[in-house]
Amino acid sequence: MVQQNPTNRLSRRGILTGAGAGGVAAVAAAVTATGPAAAAPGDPVVQGADNNAGADTTILRSTSGDATLDVRNTATVAVDADGFDAGVIGFSSNGNGLIGRSDIGYGVIGIAGGAGGVAVVASAPDEYGKTALSVRGQAQFSRSGTTTVPAGANSVTVSGLHLYASTRAFALAQRNTAAFVKAAVPDPATGQLRLHLNIAAPAGGVPVAWWLLA
Image (spheres, rainbow, N blue to C red):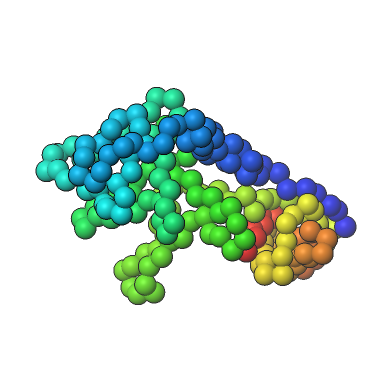
């Protein structure tokens, strides 16, 4: 039996580092800022200050062909929203509820920081014509990879994985031979994924792609 380690994984620390830079700046600004501006509901918004609207809602309306509110920050984060139920809600009756764009980073990042948290949820009724998730272009999954069952062997083990009792594994041979993947068996106790072929791999081995769910 041969053991191999998964490669080319997306670093979670890299994502958190990119997302956290703006968060650190926001926290630092909050710590050094003065108290809420002395303004009552209905007063103008004071720039460069913490404006307290009390229990009222601030609404901006416009019929402009451009954005109603254009916020820019050339240093870190343009908008830092914090809400008990939701930080940001986007809705459109005839378009896109929320759009995220980036030239060199991530258009949208979702981070689940606590147990039971879910970073991103895509939801739609289980009905014809209603799609929960549409991926247009390439998709990457950190809990996936490729390995090779060497010639003469009938199995290979991928080590160093985070596996749980709920983990399900899929695997498919990437070479058209008489040998195919008979079983993909995750072992949470050892953090290993064992891939078994129906027969010994022929000369040149059999590359296998694998993917973990949950």
